[in-house]
Image 1 (cartoon, rainbow, N blue to C red):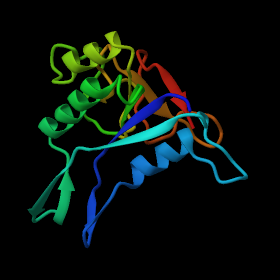
Image 2 (tube, one colour; image 1 turned 180 degrees about the horizontal axis):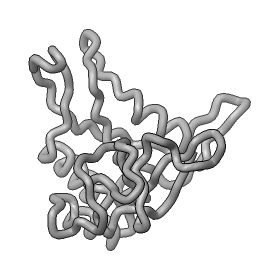
Image 3 (tube, rainbow, N blue to C red; image 1 turned 180 degrees about the vertical axis):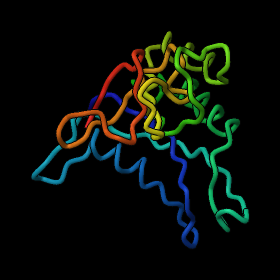
Length: 173
């Protein structure tokens, strides 16, 4: 078996007792999935799911799971502490907020943990954001130790919803 990729799971809805993390499952399937006809881009990799949401009741969502920054940081710290035991090579985060037209290391709570993960050989791979900015990324994609990834359309252009900037690392379908 190959290396493992940690996915921070932060579902947006709760159905009964089951938390739904559709975005995380979608990306995990692209990476390591296989159904006999198609395979992910890293078929030998396996997935480690790290729950980083707190169950709350709020007017905006009823009963839902929300990722607080402290939850996400604890999840990243877990990945760092367990990187050797689980042979974790990368951690994926599909989240973000804000608009940054340059590296945001001085403003982001993720700067230190991303540096530690990178130095330990664990790549923090982060979605660029879904605000459609052509000249800015969201935090934590704007952290210099993050590997920022924007989305492409079926025609291989930057997707209209995807954030992009001169300091974006990669575009992917």
